[in-house]
Image (cartoon, rainbow, N blue to C red; front, side):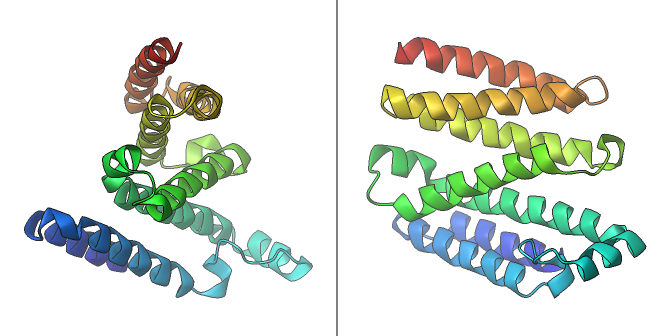
Length: 197
């Protein structure tokens, strides 16, 4: 986590102090740093570690391993999304310029949603405030993506945004952030849907 903090500090400092034409390089450098941190994790915390009988037994004996693996993965995906969506306005206006950042950002969002739907960790044991913030940010990014896309493509992003609302609504009774986020996101989806009609 300390390495993530250092990488984010460098990103924010460079973002504030470097000329705007350097933003693409800043984003690419920061994203590469995060990718390197992910690949340097021990094997048992790698998100793509193959599941075998041995890993299943290990995870039963050490239940903190799957929890920490998925929690770290969510955190890394969230920060990859946040760093890369810094240039969302640029890729929406000139798609060919930041297509790589767009792809990384949207893939990170899809993975976050997949993990959230398939995570077998009991809801009560998840860090709901952080996860709700991640899902809300993902939903806003997807909805803004839909605003600037053709109708067919926009519908896919809107469906994913609605899934974000559903995920937030699942925990809103215990989480005010999720409750407010779901309401804001629903309004944003409604506005964008009305514009695209």
